[in-house]
Image (cartoon, rainbow, N blue to C red; front, side, top):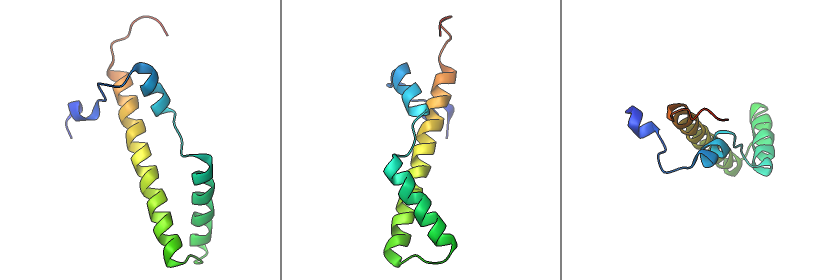
Length: 82
C-alpha cells in the first residue's frame, strides 16, 4: 500500500482526531469480551463463533481506520497551535 492510500484527505482534523480515539461500542465490547472468554473455555455454538468472527472483523477494521487517521494527522503540516 502506498503512503498516499494510507491518508484520509477528505476528513477534517476534528474528524481524524475523533476517529483516532474511537473505540468499539460498549455493548459490542462487552459481547466480544463474553464471547472471547467463553471461546477460551470451548463453549461457543456455531452461531456464537460466527458472531465472534464478525466482531473480531469489526475490531480489525476499526483498528485499520484508527491507524490511517493517526497517520494522516502526523502527515498534516504543523500550524503552530494545538
